[in-house]
Length: 310
Image (cartoon, rainbow, N blue to C red; front, side, top):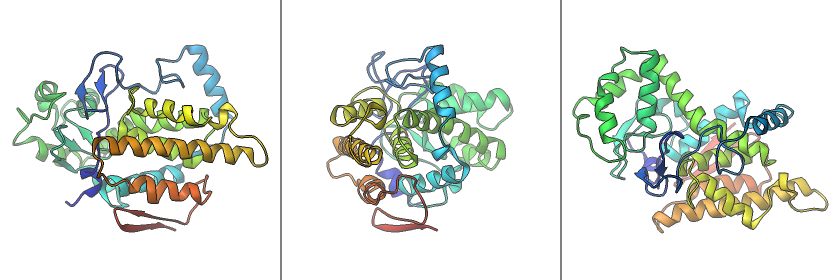
């Protein structure tokens, strides 16, 4: 399969809050607290878990807001746009059974958002899936997955693991498990935090894309680090932003411009020649058009190919 989106990724998705991994090194282990991932329970500051009172306050605020990217139609659209960046296709559902080693130090990259054997999230997915489906075809590889976690090794996985993944992905239960982990680690935290930052549907998608690409880490090139860097350049709408006529949209555009700048810079950090069309001719285009609601029809370019959604 020709997957230029995957081949151009600088980092793979990172782990759950239980294991601290570096998002700058695509799953290389890091000292505790240096660049570790955070869960959906993270505080808006990205520095640690929210208190119960903070969660209750934030839940009440979010309950009053429109669904945004979490609306079923918008969520479907988000997966389609993301799939063009990750796999150069609108058919995101066709990626559940995809698995390959990209030679990026992450071992095997697989599934709907690129879970990796070297970055803990694939291991976590299989562990959680096995709890509810103990007889699944991937369960026998759990000892090997634990051994290779944090490395690019295939020891104990070859030659049967890739075939087992493809076979398991034919089952609705495993596809659902992939969706659940995608939402738990990436989609839900990104959308929640974007809403708390005062961002509309486009901003929520921009956060989601960055969360998937850079991982939910607190270091300078993890998602929370990028957010902090953007806030040093521009206030988020929830912080006041720019005043004057049309202040909400002006503030939102100024902040998202700053966020996309640091998002793009993080992509270029690993490889100065890296293609950044997921920012330049997709997200920036939507932003410059003032399409804060991600209203269709949409047209964008990814790696030189034009995509449209009616």
